[in-house]
Every structure is written in C-alpha cells, then in structure tokens.
Image (tube, rainbow, N blue to C red; front, side, top):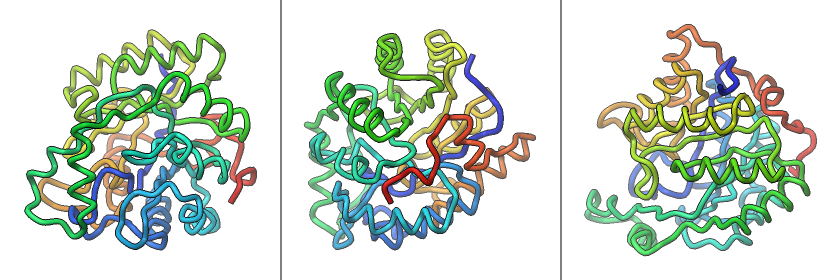
Length: 311
C-alpha cells in the first residue's frame, strides 16, 4: 500500500496546454507566473509545478532565461518545493525540455512515463476566434503529435538531472502501462524510493476520467510498488476537484492548478491558482485531513532541500 500521512497539495501554475484566449486569468508573463505561484504557496500548496511562457504572446517556451525571471523570486518569497517541467510543450525537443531544469537544478521535476498521443484539438470547437494565431496552430497540431518519452529519453533524464543534479521526480502516469514502465526502471535500480507517483486522468490519449479507473490505477500501483511510493492524483478540467477529493479519501495526495483546469466551479473560471488550492484545502480539512507543509513534503519525498538548487 502507498505511504500515507499528511496530504501534499501540488499546484501546477500555468502548464503548456491552455492558451491565452481560454482565460484572462491564465498566468503568462514571468511576473504573473511568480505571483500565481506565491499565491498558491500562501494558500497551502507545498509543491509548485512550473512551466514558462513567452511574455510576448503566452506561447510555451523552454528558454531557461525566462524560467530564471521567476524562479529566484518564488524561492525568495516562499518555502515551497519548486518542481520544474521536463515535459515542456508540444513540439519541443528533449534537449529543449531539459535546458531549464539542468540549469536550475531543482529539488523536483516532472517525469513523463511514456510516449503517447496528447490530443488538445477538441478545444478548437469551443472558440470562434483566438487572440494569437499560434493558439489555433498549437491545438490543431496535437491531432498529429506524439508526446515523445522513450526509454532512452527516460534514462537520460534520470542520469543527467537525477544523478547529475540531485533532482527527484514527480512520475507522471497517464495510463496503466506507464506504471509498468516505472516498475521497470525501479527493477533496474535507476529509480530509488520513495517515489512520488502522479496518476493523471482525462487527457485525450491517456486513461479516461472514470472512477473505476482511479481505483484500478491505485490497486495496480500498490501491487507494483508496495509501500515504496506516495500516490497523488490530478484530473483534467471538470474532473479536477471530484477526482482529487476521491483520491484523497483513498489516501492520496492531490494536484490542482490552472495547468489542469481553468475553472473553480461549473461554468465559472477560477481567478487564480490560489483559489483552487484554497478550495481543495478547505474540502480536505473539512474531511479531517491534515495538509503537509513544504518541509514535511521534503521529508516525505527525500528531497535535497531548497538551498541546494541553481537559482
């Protein structure tokens, strides 16, 4: 069974899925990302998962210089664990995706557990016009896109970022096979417990947001990993809060944030990442659960500490 205790709240502040047209509240500039992250930490997030955007038009960027515009500010203003993406955005090479984390040497980084279709194109039907032309192209290109994460790519990230920088990982599992990929890396000794296993539901190309699937992913992870892992849950869009609540009741940790959903309630856009963190925290505390502080999360996940990073 997965390790349990206080609940770690992760907040994914901006991501690379949603585009500027979809919400005026989506953090785009380095200042907005910093403010969104700091607000989320103040609301109770122990871990901040971060992507960067081009400040000119909001498109995802792998540029380390943009990351370095907000990382030091977040570190100075909060004690939260900074978790940098290695997934980047659609169309980025593995070299581009690794550029920022290798420079920043964070305590944590995301780690995608398999190649997959990653379909965003259904979102095209919701919007007649876009603020920027890149948005339409970004969504349409996902119709003919494979999110690449080969075993060679994984081995490289574990060596260069894991061994080389002391970074530990949020293992992102979008389907059942991804759990088995992680078990393979664990069997080879390339991954060391305790693992932070993030099961992801509702992405087109991954496992669907059905409650039976939540149970199945948890049972599979328990069987494969025993007590060598902490379990966390995220779900896309309208499934975010219900799945996080159900998963937490089952002993899991949770991830919210505007990377995963732009809404705070049915038909109502969230005005900030902090609002989503505050909502899931309120739900969990009403259910008599305790929320982990950043330092408690560090201890649970065996992280190296915020003083040993490159920003």
